[in-house]
Image 1 (cartoon, rainbow, N blue to C red):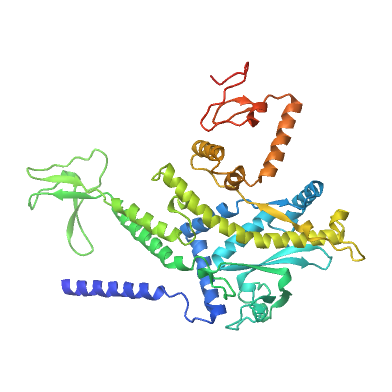
Image 2: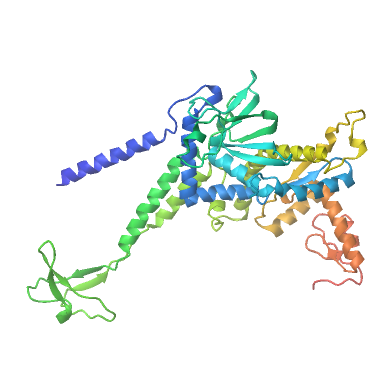
Length: 499
């Protein structure tokens, strides 16, 4: 019996090892340099990634937390034409226009940015048709999911793109949206070609292959680990449930007639024909035990103390795929101190800034297309200084100059970090512009203008507002005077203090 059990266990172990080895291989055929993953395998990985996001709370949390950190509610547009009055006009026009650009009328501009970043992470890439003009001449933006970027439905090598000899896209093909799996006509229909000037592909390039044409899912290398975590948690839950039943260890002396619980105990014959003692346990039950007999409650040892540590290690391993530390994924900073928390945040910022820079490209394409259409339709009238002289009256490129204000990230210890930033600026190690890049979506010029507006507003209302350095209180007029690092600025004569 023991030999058969050992053999069965070895066979099960070998099967698990074999399964683990084979599932590491995500795709079957390696393509040419431009197509490292052929279309069918890329769509297979895409479907697997969607399944994990929809069914695995941990994978969902990794993706959503990443998108929250990179996009938040959306980027803030700051026109930079050089004409302050026209910049303000463009800002007001953009605020009124941006949330009406989605062709489906469902998402705001910030919502579209979140969708683009999510689809890039999960599907590998996403298309943004940023210059869609309907029959009424209205301008919209159409988001195209990766599986619709195709020319032929069943072409193994079709990547939905035509490119020149230098690898630059010339035309993209957008397939129709099937109603369901039974809509064979839509699935067989060829994609509609659109100019690459009106279409932008936001893609994840694993390994930064410069000749790769289509992106692949960012979660590709996470599939095995996510499956392991689910299996481990599932197995432990079964052990915990099994241990949740109240169990007793009874030690009795051999007695053919004696009973442990007295008259309340009954002898019942089980289905296997074996007689067993039964006693319904109620509060304050009393057991009649003889010398050397004992009843002890069996305590559960599941989960083991090392289980959480091992599970956290696997989750940390998974988070490296998207640059997300365990502490941010689980919203748990209890095991790190201030220095470690700052280090983790700084490492995350580097990853998030790269993603933000990539997301700015389709966002800027949408802004330029929307502004061009607004100028052509007369909704926006540029100043004469920004128009070329001549019959064509074309606009100068300066009108499209802008920047994006990206969401700032929270500080681990605001008081300590503000104090450190103040000392860094005072000693000349850092600039205010550099500090704003980490803590705000404003530039220095925008901050000064906004601050002046606030000061003038408070003064006009007769409200006495005081600011200081390093936690001290000082009159607003004195806040512009330089203060030596570490030196406490004394309040002006007659001014009240917090003491």
